[in-house]
Every structure is written in structure tokens, then in C-alpha cells.
Image 1 (cartoon, rainbow, N blue to C red):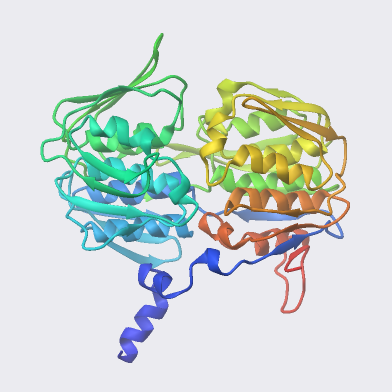
Image 2: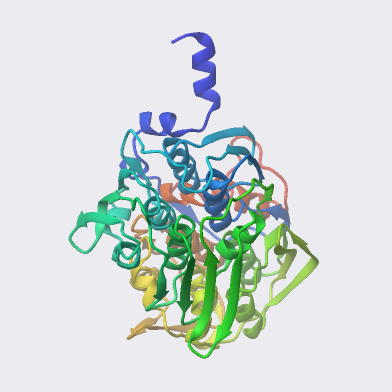
Length: 479
């Protein structure tokens, strides 16, 4: 290999470099978190919103022209989507930190990939990609890591089969999955059996290539980033709340036009620093540029109901999405009951809410959490186990989680099995910052799928917002 080629390979965070390295799950990285010496303090930005990042790459690949993206999350999950779009014929180029350019092929213009599409640990990427592939006359095979291969895909296979696409999968509709897209896709008229933004988005992506109107009905409103971005790229989307649920109608076969996308900070990632500030005495933390889409802010609503000192500063709208800075200060919390209708707006945040509930006074009941059973892990069971390992009583009653709060720091001292789940790992480490004894996670490698640099960022907050020098250990470090 020439020096120029070697330099280029070293500078590009693409799929070739990742494939050359051992898979993340082959090299566990345990971490331990202990209470910091003082309060957490500082201003920070978290990585870009993962949901919006996936969609920006996909819609950019379907648009005519060149889409410029700023603030893209460069975690493993999103990089898998970037690699898949390249494999499907789009030109995807990294320009700098968080800055990417996508030269699209137009709706219906994707090409057959020459190799298997490896989606790593990302259920969002895999399910949305099913919709993208279903509307194109091509054959593709998709796989993922051990965790993703356990996750059910039947929930997207069933509606997408109605377009004329054909699927072949393992038992239970699990990956690896072969997709033969429809040559003449049919529009869908589909009612979601359960609220799922991923299934809704997969149906809309398939509907882009079909003539006529694709209609999707969801029983409860779910995150609407797909609808917002479709409009941003020029599609005609109509949304109406009706007695049967929220109805989304998409006019098929539009010509999407390239459009600049500025990705806000991920509210799911911001949650960890904010909850840590609420729990560590004397803390005050500001997370800047957080996406505040009302269908994503259920956690913040719940924390305020629990008595959290949490407020929005500098509220604004960017790229069709509400954005603001979130300030959190330490405050005593009390138990609440979280209604099932709120679950879709905070489905990824229940593990970190459970950590907050462990430190609150009283018994917090979180209702309607069936969807947590089919995340990167059985996240409902994993959350209860996380708490139990650290001296907090937690019970699962049907699809509800009950957390018996201690009204202060939990005992800690446990080792948490992360089950290849990044949110379980980060939630356990936040618990360690608030607990009386350190908390260890068996493997923190998967944090990089959504939040590269998580431990360094939290350690910076423990240092009052200052970067630590070489050899200076923060409260989150290898055991």
C-alpha cells in the first residue's frame, strides 16, 4: 500500500478500518464508577441525535443532489448506516468532525450491494434499512452482531411484505435477513399493532418508492423525525390526530431535493449527564444544543414531576426541530407514577430514569414497558438486575417496573452485566457516581455505539469542566 493510501485509510473512520479490527464484543472493557470528590460542574455538548443522524444519511442517499450534514453522531451505529448507504451506491464522505456530505441517487435509484450489509448493534438502522430496501428492485442480505441477531424483525417484515417485497430470515424473523425488493412496490395502508417509530419509519421509507399514498396509523404518537425530515427534503406528508390514532399519509414517488441538515444533541445521551447532576450533591451542569422534539422529552417531563431542578435555556428551532440548552442542578427527588402513554416519548430513557428513581423517596412505578423487552437486551430485566446488584429493590409486574427509592445514595458495590447494551452500561456508571460504594460494569465497549467519549466527558464534569491531564484518574476508570 502506498503512503498516500495508508494515510487515507488512517484518516477515514469507515467500514474498512472497523472490519480490520476485532469486533467490540471480542474485547470487553470493564469500567468502574465511584462518587466524585466534589460536585459535577460545567457546560458540555453531547453527540448528535442518533435517530436524526441515521435518517439524515438515508434521506440524503435518496435525494437528488448533495446533502451537507453537520453534527452527525459518529458512533458505531451511525457509521454502519453510512457504510450501508455507500454499499447501495450513494457517495458518502466525511469532511471533518461531525461534518459529512452525501451525494444521493434519487428515490428508487439505489443499487444492489456487492456484499452483506453488516449493521453491527443498530436495531434502528436495520429496521429502517428494511423499508429502504423493500422499495427498490434489488437483492440484499443484512446481518449484525450477536445482540442484533437476537432482535425481532418480524414487526417490519410483515407490513413491508405487503409492498411486494420478499424476505427470508431465521426463526422469529431474526437476522441474517435476505431482502428481495419489489420491482413495482405497492403503497401501504397499515395500522401499527404497537407504537413504534422504527416500524412507522420503515413503512414510510418503502412508501417513497410506491405510487399513490402510503398511510400509517399509530395508536400512540411516536418520535416524528422521519415525518419532519421528509418534509425538509421536499416530500408531501400529512399528519392528523383521529379517533383511531395518529394518521400519517405520504405521497409516493416524490423527487426529494438535497437539503442541509444540522443534527442537534441527542436527548437520550444528554439524559446521563443531567441525571448525574441531579443526584450528585452541589452539582450544576448545562448540556447545550439538545434536541427538544416534544415526542422525545418524556424523561424531562417525568424528572420535573419528581421535583428535578431542570430548565430550558436559549430555546430555538433549527432545521425544523426544537432545540435548547438544558440546565440541571442537584435537588431531592420523589417518586411518581409514569403513565403508559408516555412510554413512546422516553422509551430509551427508562434505565437512567430507574437510576434517578433509586435515589428518590418512595416507590416509582413505570407502566407499559413491553417494548423494553426487545431492545439491545431485555432492557426491562436488565434494568431491574442493575438495581438489584447495587442494593436497590426493583420489581417487574407484567410490563411495569417498580423501583423502591432510598431517598438518597444507594449502597452500590455491585457488578452489572451490561448484556451488550450501551444504555445499561451508561446508566450503571451514573449510578456509581451517586452510590456509596463503586459500581462496576463488565463491558463498556458498546457505549461507543451511541456515545463515544462518554467516560471522558463525565470525568471532565467531575473536574469542574476542565480536561484532566495524563495520568489523572477521574471517577470513571478501569477497575
